[in-house]
Length: 307
Image (cartoon, rainbow, N blue to C red):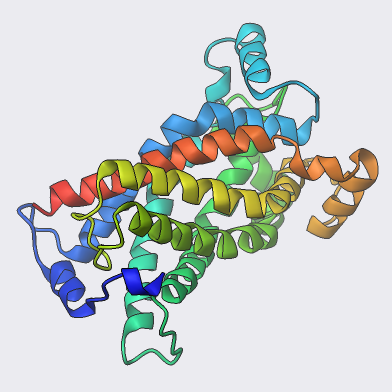
């Protein structure tokens, strides 16, 4: 794979230092493009995310779309969008942080100053993705806790702000808002590394292996869409059991689970190992859709803002 990727870091650095017509530098472009991509991804995938969360919390044999249509019929048209405000408010910042951390980390790993000598470009991509995944945990852990509790069937909260305040009042900042931080870190760190690695790999293959590192002009929107969707499916498939444990731990407001290990043990004891794959289908549909949209939005926003 390495032979089909043209490595030209000096060109990449010059492009990132160039100021576009809006007066934005490369780092500013990555922040703004990441923000736009995050919002687009959340809006497109939230209904399927609600189905995923409910299937993880309340296992049934219903299909993904049967569960979705039943939710709409019983609870109304807006029910699949319950809990959208926390990720919508946080996702822009989360993706801005994600992309803005990933790009400098990858460039640093490729530089002579890096204490970690990683000659493989894809190795640099994976490690930079892990760093970016770790960085975004500070945003994803609390925002997803509020989102999950809002998405739950029969949620007691009328708004995201009420849920947030109640969680902090009942359990404090650490055990309330940041409950599940450790298991979120375990999910996101390798997950995002795999995410960027598979995106760059598939995008290069679909572009005939002629990509310059960081060059979005060479890849077509179709290649970006397919690479983004594939990256989403692969990264979520490998981390899905951890995500189930995280969901069940963060949804728990009664103190049933002491920690992530206890949540895993008790969930498997009650439902068997199949609980670790409840909602997997909904997650895969959502993973392709959201990540295809996210990467196309990111690349297109960066392309237009840098003209």
